[in-house]
Length: 512
Image 1: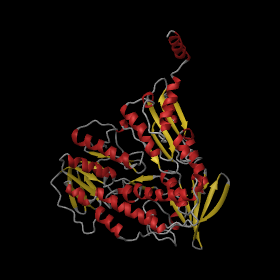
Image 2: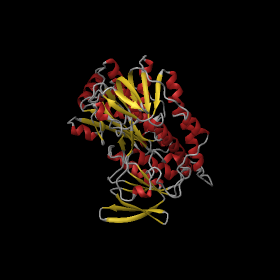
Image 3: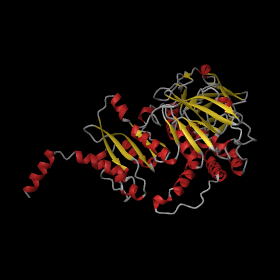
Image 4: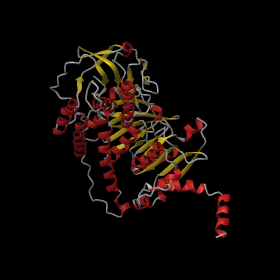
């Protein structure tokens, strides 16, 4: 029995085969699909039909390149099927329930009887997922001139692979097989069963009690969403704070938000063992020398991802890899085989859809047209879609310190932004880092209700080479929460008003 089928005794993990699932299946892997006859040699062969693979294949096809795309399971990858799309649909509904319960904060009456219809929540998610599955459907790819193959691919040499007994030859290849949820090694966990992103969205009823192991983006998002949908939730993190790569004050704000939501937060805590007794899961937790046991109905894991490198025949292709870091690439996304490139979660540190797609564009340019585009030159924002959201771009303070880069930080608490006050969303901040002595933006962190949207303004400024001084001249619609960015820029401008400059201005005014 595989871990995906060893789940709770009471929860159904088979998604209803409704019209929405039928639409999605028809788009991402039709039952009656027959692989085409292969061309003699493909100019680009893409292995993996997730965000990176789809982006690479479509870009190359638009340029008139002969392209083949190989997908083992379903087009769209984790992002569409088990990641960004379904999770954000559920998060939106969970946020609405939280706002209803907190209606008094907005001067409204709390509804008398708030009941969570979990089945309808999940149906909405499936409807949205089915709709978006058309963007990367088989029909669209074929119409673009891409040969689509379904099945397990394995390299047989430096410029060939087999799929379902058929050999494909290529001049250049792109590996974009993505990653899967990493499962912690905990005695009894596999036997008790667990949820990960591959199966959590197949639930048709909520667990009454949920334990989330891991304080990364997926773990944090799911813990808050399920709590707001009525599940009694505990989140366990073996570190002092969640989101270990983010600013500590941002992570602390998230921990405080979890506590307000009613999530039981266990930091600096590890899971020692899981066992099943009388139909419920008993989990032993350890914090320093203190050990206690909690009973739950379901366990979700969110400790990161493992790259999908197994069974690809990478050694036969001359591609270096390891099971922890995936396919090894240089700054041009080229592997140890100069004819094979990689993009997406299979080789990148940050597992985000938009980073995967951007990396794929670089790989196609470099592989097919001799480009010298570098991954390190990308300015990439990301966001954890909790409430409040935590978004970041560029350098963190600790990274600047490690690289001996002198920086100065300008921080504006969200309670100073009028719109945040009128929205009763005053928790959070805008924090912008510049190279000391200049207005060159090196990085930023935003904690706010819509931080994921707000960070894009700073990302644009960094890409365009616009300094913080210039941002202060950007007129923002009033009132908006993004005004906090302009306020940070104003704070920078005030540092330019040195006593010497003020004295000079006063002398000049006195002469008029």
